[in-house]
Image (cartoon, rainbow, N blue to C red; front, side, top):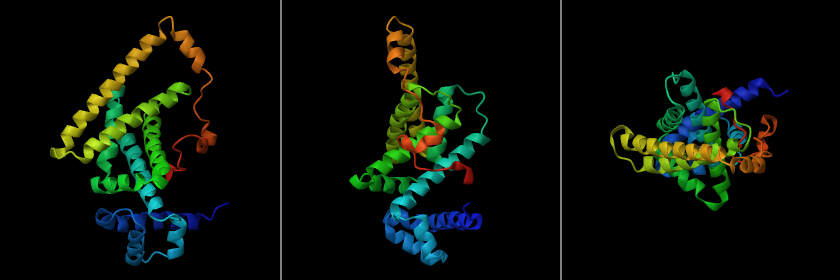
Length: 234
């Protein structure tokens, strides 16, 4: 059984190093030197930091991303979404996720994940976010829709992030308008898909995809984007 005190120390080290590193990230990017600066400022044991971020800056950036997902889950749990249509709930979740993030830290992160050796981690982080959104909103699909929902939202989320990074409007109102348009396009696609499934060709589609199931929760490490994150400790 893991040492709970060590686990708490490790979690504390992650939080403190990230907090101290962010101001440096905004100027220097997600590079290993920001971890060194954070260690010097916090006095956290270097061995503990190495355990927390064995790959250095890439693990720090992924922890920042996962922390944002955790904060979003808390924000959604605290919000009253009962009066919203489902499409509005999805838009609310995406907006909540972006409002949690720092634009420059995200911009620097895109540069990091654009490197070929980090591309897989970037895709995993994106997939983890959209999976977290759907799960937090109560998605119960366990068939091919589990994948199509996340793939579709990945496209919406990615496009919105890029728009948001260049948005200079007050309170990012142009970004939220852009997001709502993208969500509306997705809902139109869902209506078309629903109509198709009711057509004579629908049963053929169902027969071709009925073997596709969502990943078993006990084996999440086998599906795209799983980073091993657990939102329960944030």
